[in-house]
Image (cartoon, rainbow, N blue to C red; front, top):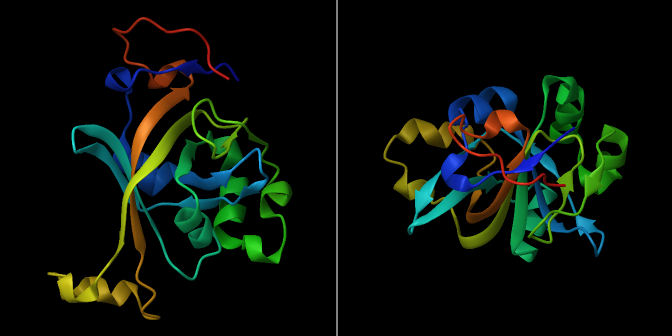
Length: 185
C-alpha cells in the first residue's frame, strides 16, 4: 500500500465516521523494545488543543492496554480499509493478557516514523501521538447523569491527549489542493 507523509494542515478526515464506523486501532508502547499492545477504539476525538493538533483517546483501567497508555509516552491511532474489519473486531474483543492477539489478528506491526509506539503495515492512515496530558473521568462531573450508565462496573476511563506529531497514509487523506510530499513508510 502506497502511503505518503501528510502535513497536518492538509489532512482530510471524517472524524465521526473514523471513530464510530471505521474505528481506530490504538497502539501504545515501544515497538523496538517489543513492549506494546493494541486495541480497537471507537470513542475519542481529533482537533486542536493548546495550539497543537491532538487526538484524545480513552481507555478503561480494566483493559490490558491501560498499562501501556500509563507506562509509555507515545501511541498511534491507525485506520484500516474495510478488508481489515475482522482483525479490528478481533483486537477489540480479545485481550492481550491472554496471548499475542496482534499475531492472531493477522496485522503486521512496524516501526513508526517519529514515535516509539508501533504502527501497522496494513493501515491506510497513521496518526503518531505523544501524550501531553492524562486524567481519569470523575463521575461527579458528569453533567448528563445518564453517562454514568456507560459504567456499570465503575471502571471510568483514563483520558489521554496526544499531540499528533506525524501523519501518513494513502493519498485520499491528503487535501486535493495539496502537493503530495515524499512517500512515507
